[in-house]
Every structure is written in C-alpha cells, then in structure tokens.
Amino acid sequence: MRASVRGVSVLGVSACVPEREIDNREFGRSLYGKDVESVVVTTGVEKRRIATEGTTTSLDLCVAAARALFEREELAPSSLGGIVFVTESPDYLMPNDATQAQRILGLPESCFAYDVTLACSGYPYGLWLSAMCARSTGKQVLLLDGETNSHFASPYDKATALLFGDAGTATILAPDDSAAPWFFEFKTDGTGRDALLIPEGGYRNRITPESSIYRNYPDGGNRRPIDMRMNGMDVFSFVVRNVPGTIESLMEEQESTPESFDFLVLHQANKFMIRQIAKKLRFPEEKVPISIDRFGNSSSATIPLTICANLRDHISEGSKRMILSGFGAGLSIASASLSIGPCVCPGVVDYVE
Amino acid sequence: MNQTEAVILKAVGEILECPVSLTTLRTDVPEWTSLKMLQIVMALDELGINLPLEKIADIRGVSDMVAMASEESR
Image (cartoon, rainbow over all chains, first blue to last red):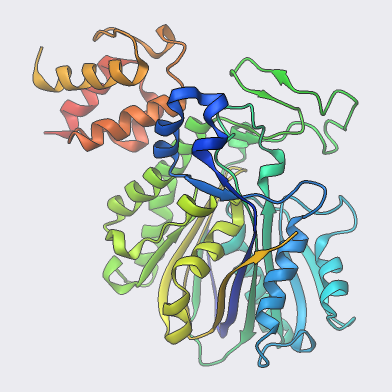
C-alpha cells in the first residue's frame, strides 16, 4: 500500500541507550561455547546496550532522548501538539506510555497522545502517523520510539540470546509547506504471526504462575512463555522476498534510482542480510549505515538509532535524501522515502541508571 | 564431483562439524539450525558461490544448494 504526506519536515532526532554494555563474545560463551565467535560474526552483533529490567524502561530511554532535543532552545515541549509513542514494551498494559511522556516532559494538557503497537516496522509507520498529525493540527509532533527487547529475549535460547539491545529515540516533526513530499510503502502478512511471537502475557493467553518458568521447547530453545519465540528462517525468508520489492516500488514511484539517494537505512536485524539487501538494490556499502555491531537489534528504534549514531554530522549540516525500511513481527514491512536535515541531532546519549 | 560440489561439501562439513554427502538433508543433522544455515550461506558467499537469499528457506539439503549454485552461475 502506497501513501504520501506533503508539507512536513524533521526538526530534530536523538537517541538514548543504556550505559551498560554487553560484550557478546563474553556473554555468549557459556551458551555457545567455542561457536560464540561464529555466532557473533553471523549476526553482526558484537556489543549491545542493556537496561536493567524493572528499573529502566523504553519510556525512560525515550524521555531522555527527548530531553536531549529540548536542550536546544529552538525545540521546546510547549511547542508540541502531541506525542506518538511506538513501542511493544510499554511500562504498563494500561495506561499507555504516550500519556505518561506528556506528564513527565511537561507537554501542554491540550496535546494528543497515543501509543502505536508495532515492532520492527514501527519507525516508518510512526513517521507517517506523526506527519499526518502534524499536518492536521498545524503543530509540531513528538515521535517517541523505544524498546527494551532484551527483557523478553531468553539468555538461554540460542535463536535470540545475543541479538537484542535496548534504546529510546525522539524525533520532532513540524508542518513545513516548503518541504518535499514523503512517500511510504506498507506490506502486511498476518499469516506469518508465529514467526515472531510472545505467547503469554496478552489476553489470548493470560499470565499464570508458570508463565515465568524457563522450559525446553521442541525448537530447541529454553525460554519462558513470556519470552519471544523466533523462527529466524521464516523471518529471514519473508524479509529477503519482500523488502527489496517495497523499496524498488518507492524508488519507481519517484522515478528515482539508488544514485538519487544519499542513504539507505535498514532495520538492524542482521548484518549479512542488510548487506545482501543493499547489494540486490545496488546501493553501495558506504550508503548503508550499520549500527547493529555496537547496539544490537532494538526493534523499531534501530532506524532512528542508526541515523543518530552514524549520520549525525550529515543531517546536522545539510539535507540528506534517505530510504528507511523496517520489517519484522506481524509480519510487517514499512518503508519511507524522505529528506532529513538540516536538523538538530545530539547523536546518541547514554542513560545512566 | 565437480568443483562447486566439492566447495559446498567442504563448507557445510566444516560448519556443521560432521561428515556430509551430496544426499545429506537438513533433517539428518540436528545441529543444522537456521543460524547454521545462515553461516553456510555466508561462507559460500565469501567463496564466490551465491545462493539466492529468497530461496534459502526452501533448501532441504546439500543437493538443493548445489542445484541453486549451478543455476546462479549460468
């Protein structure tokens, strides 16, 4: 499904990660033994940042990212018309994180605030929704996007133990009649639900005393029912069969080629997969930033985190035309084509617990 | 046995750390997980043997890899 929004620009983007860094070669030694090196090379995740469960949440990380933006006097909570919060790891099942971000950040009570429950495809969706909100209200919108995936990835499940990191990000969008249109492409396949699933904790399978007990599963994983179950090959297959096509469609819509774009920022799911998708689309490596090596997979936050970690100087100084693509649980793909910059970009700040 | 078959057998055997043949299936080897499959694909890529990523999920065994590699090289 194609969509476009006209007249919006990004005023600022920032990211925040927990100060605590995990070295995967050390962390994975007891689970993988001598295979840990090959697992690190295969996934591309050498280090990742982890928040302490029960102490730091994606709300905390996103609020910190937003405060980094507000240190610049041209960006202020009082200017915001609303908050869109993308997360699959909210503080509570009720109320949502967006209303709590309004309270903590001191946004006007007149603002709107809602959460969006999406995993790895969440950031392009968040941009689309926030852009429409900015146009319809005529006000700036704060898009918060954060996850603490490490809290539902079992350290004893070889499929997921070394993959996930935690991060929070903040993006401020504003109405801008001079801005070039943004284009989006969406794809959804709900038949792939079981490829990435947390079986218990929702309302289909409520929490029981056994939900937090580790057990061995037929797929070889050792995890709790409240941990993520991932069929890596099904996810990989869906991504490589569908993501390139959505990006090609975005380029065709604009009669553009890879040469027309400065960067291709892909969800940081797997380093080899990113390189192969880029190769298939004929984007040179220097246009495809990688952050999974340092921060792991923080689900929907990986795209803005990668922008802040790798492209800070570029977007601080000038306008850069980018394609962004997020893909994962659902199964879901969302891709966006837009220009970002010049804008405020404090980069990646550490969250000290 | 041609060179492509030899390279694939060597790479698969090294990564799975067990003897394999052209008739070995994924179901024959418990250690042949999706992560190991990706390692095999990466290793072959570095050796110049490109398997189409969109068909990796369809690989049932070594012979499928040989067939795909042969088709890609045409």
